[in-house]
Image (cartoon, rainbow, N blue to C red; front, side):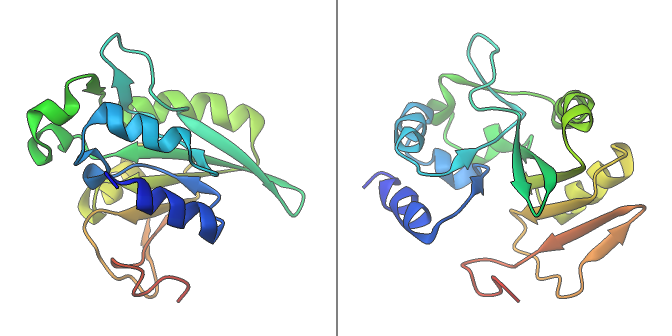
Length: 171
């Protein structure tokens, strides 16, 4: 299904928000864009741009929940070009993640009550984001498949990860 089955399953699960990871590019960047056009959930990624430099997806999304406006910024690892076959990124530029997060935070702080980062960068890099970008309430991380049952506090930011394959999802 060239990745389409995962989009269908996530849509059926009622996923609210998604940030692509490196494996979403396994069938190419244009295929991923087509597949995500069919998603029944929002997408965010602040550091993936098209070949002209414009963001491929919104850099952030705001979701209202229990009277709060929750802001979510998506970010993918800067190492994406080393993790994916070159041809699969033919129409994609990976922007500096810290600079991209900071740019989105400036806008998001004005229109949301709390700011979160959805990261596909790995625990080590998530710790750097927490240290380098003030104001992030929590980082919901992935890529390194780390299980953090209690989370990890870095400064004022809580980092959480749920392993991989849904094994710890909801715990």
